[in-house]
Structure formats: C-alpha cells, structure tokens
Length: 243
Image 1 (cartoon, rainbow, N blue to C red):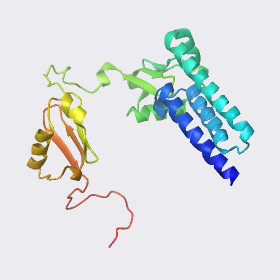
Image 2: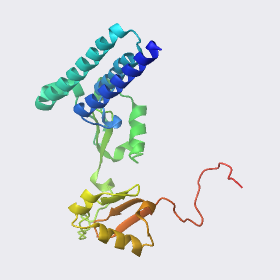
Image 3: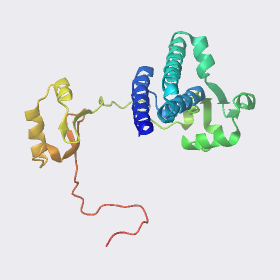
Image 4: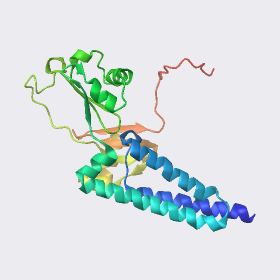
C-alpha cells in the first residue's frame, strides 16, 4: 500500500514538473525540433519516467533534482543560443545547400550524412519530380527541405499577372465547442447579440449546437454544427458499411 501511494505521489510530482518545465522552456512542434532538441526531449522524458516509477523514497528527490537540473540546463542552453549566433549554430546546426541550379552538391550532402534517396523523397513531398527544375534546395537544421524552383517553373501568382487582390486577414474564432469566446468578440467590436442574430439567420437556435464558428476577413460567419445534416456523406474507405 505504501509503495502504491509513493508511486501515485511521484507520478503527480513528475506530471506537475513536466507541465511547469515545458511551459517555461517554450513550445515547438515536433517537426521543428533539431536532432539535439529531439534527443534532449527523450532524455527529459526518461528522467521524468524514473521519477514516476522508482519506488525507492530515498531516490525520489534525487530524480526530481536531476529533472530540475536538466530543465535548467536546457533553458540555459536555449537562452545562450538565443543571444549568441555561434552557440546557436553549435547547438542547432545551420542550413546547408544541397542543390544549386539543378546540380546536386554531393560534398555538402556527405557532410550532413544525407543521401540521394532522402533528397528525392523530400523533393517529391514538395511536388518536385525533376531536379533540373530546382534553383536551390536547402536542408534545414530540423531536417526539412526548403526548395526554390527556377523562375520559369514556378506557379503564376496574381502579382505576376499584375492582378489586384483583396486583403485577407486571419479568421477570428468566436465559438468553440459550444462556448462563446467573449474576448475574441470584443476584439472585433461585436457582441453576443450580434452573434445570436447571425446564428439564427443560419437556422441555429441554440449556441450549444455549434461546434465551431469563425468570423472570416470578409465579415461573413462560418458555422460548423456538432451534428451536421448530410444527406449523402462521402466515405472514401473500403470498410464494410453498417446495415
């Protein structure tokens, strides 16, 4: 019983520590992590796991100290990298050109332990199937590939055709999961009464029916209900359908 209580306490301690420390360290998507940051995260999780599961009470605070020290070192390394470019290059690495004017730079690829198969795969993910169409391809520190096509191979834009375009801002969330976001309403100088009128105009009588509603940049309201009334929903899978 005592061991169970110790595990419960340590798990709560590890959970709280991870929650607090990760908030302090900042947020990055997994796809944006460098190799160092990825390994660092695994190590951080391993220490937290040891804190949660080691039932020896004498080692609980040692694990917690180790987790705290590791978080402090991670924060310190991040801060130094933020203010010092040489340190940032040492920790995170730097972009490397792997294609220039349709030519693969094999020497740069060897330095990065990067092969042609990986290059071709990442080019295809960018909808590029002919290396000769590439002006520059740059391997980023997080492993992603940035591609600049040759000017004659790039898609046309309104600017190329000298066509005027309207400003498009970021849509503003007004309702999420049946809850009105009053701060967002206030930011766009609207109120709950306006929102209710707009919803009623779209046949919505109760705000709890709304899963998601956003105000578009053109002033219109997009509404998605929790229960969509679809007469013929499309299913692209080949799973057997219920009778």
